[in-house]
Length: 85
Image (cartoon, rainbow, N blue to C red; front, side):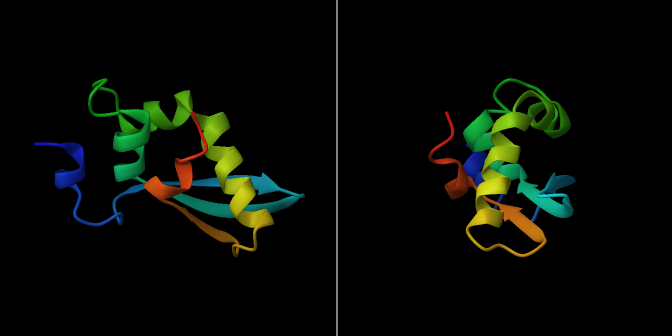
């Protein structure tokens, strides 16, 4: 089964906090994003391990969303990582 078939929604994932401009923000990255963009399932690593390995990219995308006007609760989906290699 392909990972995109496994998650019908992007409501399963990891919550984390990030400090941006001296303010704490709550962020969520979907399991679908971890699997499809960071290949967590194919590499047989846990979502937390995938997050830790790719924290720099994930935090960069979260910061960009805040700069673009997101509220203090940031949601990161597969489409948010198109610019992150």
